[in-house]
Length: 222
Image (tube, rainbow, N blue to C red; front, side, top):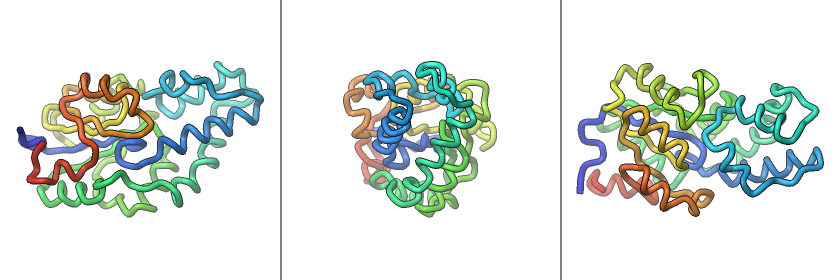
């Protein structure tokens, strides 16, 4: 047993599926969006786009499904489809808000490293009252490459003025876990219904695995 926060100065969270329970929403949006243009949602789609930035994902959709839209039009459509759901239907992951308070009380810095757009991040952080806990929020569109590239995690660490080795990352999918590990950070995988079929892979890649954030606050140990 070890203290997961020992010798750490910062915690960096992915957003969807890690900090908030929203992956169900994105599968629904993908299905509804593609249906507008006569396409079904391929079973391998989520794995194919895993970790991509918002812009990279829009480019993938445009090319894969030959959509008669610009990349910016695709992104705007997704924002419009998701924003109300983020404000009204997306809850925090179990124990997430309590853990954020716990981390703040211990003097930890907190950042977000997400593939989503600013509008979506703003909507969910404001609706859940989470914004005050974070010193840095970064989207993958601000860096050269999305996950599993380490770029976004290295940028958040730089903006928090901490070294990668002083960071603990929380992620819900393999591409994100790989990004954190490639950045030289300790990574804790978070259980999520959407990625349950990947649990064995997630456990193999990550340093820790939790079902919810209350596990960490039970004496601060895993």
